[in-house]
Length: 509
Image (cartoon, rainbow, N blue to C red; front, top):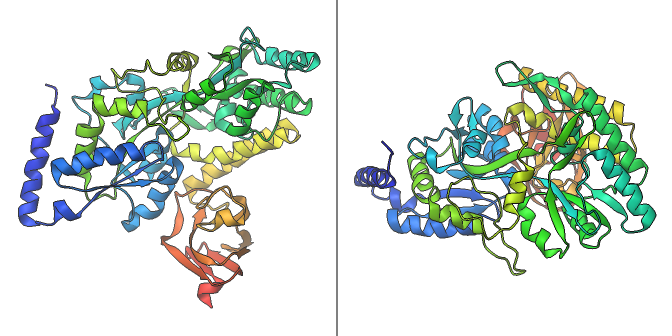
């Protein structure tokens, strides 16, 4: 028998009334805390107002990026400073489960409301760890006027680049985000490369890393040739890719449905295509498929309310439609556009959804295992080095070795890197604050378990932790260390891996 939302509401209301009779202030004073990215936060705030009206429980929505939410849950959750609910990408599940940071969600009776692909993405170790709301993949966006027919192989892409340059029609045939594993994966997969192989039971074989496989090397050499021969630009991010595409300087770019409206706004006569394959290897390159969903923190004291909020307010036709439609900013750009996992959502307002889905028909689910966290920075760095002229084969071999070292270190507890990750990192040149992967603030191994480093930090009120092995899976201490600087100061940090303690010259003095 299908479980109904009404029955859940009555059950939770009854339990709330019972609790209020014992602790009268609870329902009024304890907010349900939700962490959401900038696109979803305003929508959830409105839903929270309805939840408060129905239950008498206030909802507090904090805007935070998806990656930051995952890291901060591991960072602050154990100290009681995390959310009750947070939005996560599906590939964070393995890491969060391994650290006991989220709890399974029971969708019994509601499964038929969701696509099988969406549920599969959020299923790990035979349990469901989130309420999925979107699934996505990247595709090749082609200027039809410059390239009338979609290229079938990456070899054809190279020939197109040469032809467009010789004719003066465009500077490049293709621009791919530089040093980005996610956007470059279709090249790797087309040549037969992969991230992790599979065991006989279908699970990932973390000892079989396909970056330095024959196909991995072939993809590296293709990329290297494109860069070294001036057929593809380096230093490309999303904004640069769109600038080149809009100006007609590049004929094709790589992006996903989250930029659907931006693609339309270029004014280019475009087509959304599957990725080229490699002659004699594959017919098409496979992108990663990924998903986003709502998870419940294991550190929450309001799990029952959190589940009720998700099942009876979020997992509804009305709200899932709102999530897809999104909201418009001052420039008229919509925050929606990701293909929904909730069956019955009307996607007709976005003409690109069907094409993105078709381009991802062969998509490979991004591994949601904890070991995937050991891949990103090493492979990103390798891709960047290749774009800068590094020899592709030893570069991919070194990346594979670094991935293996990181995986082994995570399994054995060994330390290969200690990063001072904190609120001041962006000031020191890191991509953003609280970035355990940033090499700029890594300490040096002095031997005997002692790691040290000295950094010049500007005046301000800061906080930090010592993160092990470029990840939040292991970080010290449990609560952040405060660092108060009245002026720019050289601060020396010392981490003792024997005692698992971090000290700094300011607080020690």
